[in-house]
Image (cartoon, rainbow, N blue to C red; front, side, top):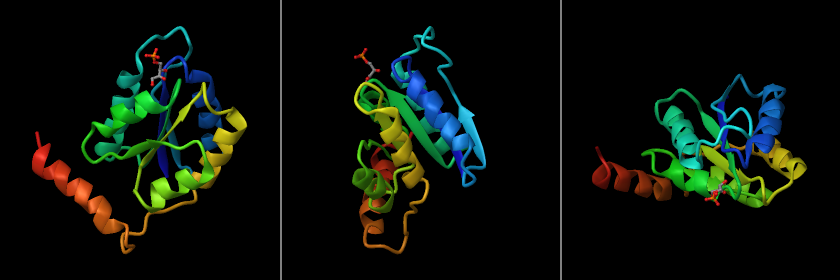
Length: 154
Ligand SMILES: O=C(CO)[C@H](O)COP(=O)(O)O
């Protein structure tokens, strides 16, 4: 699995910890870190969230982990990219359902909300979930995709 990670300066420390966890996980074949590299880089969360989501939309990464202060800003930004589904998930059940129900490619965290150990536990679990295209959830996700393709085509 190829994973892209990104964060603004509020999320950089947690993003770096998650990146290192991902690099050590044998299920992960590639980790792309789009930054920021340190808290001195004040690029705003939409810049990072959109860049990561675009990598996924282009097929250059399979999934993403994004971090900002709350996780909300990077999730909103990533969801603006057609074909990308992103959500904040600060608990195990939401993280699981984000994949199994919603086929989200991106999970986001708020570094001002969740501690690093819980975030890393959730990421480790999240790597093990897969969306079943034959499941009852598939037509619901397809409804969203159809809307995007009908109304948001550029
Ligand atoms: O959490 C953020 C956006 O959701 C970001 O890290 C901080 O944003 P701000 O409160 O607008 O500075």
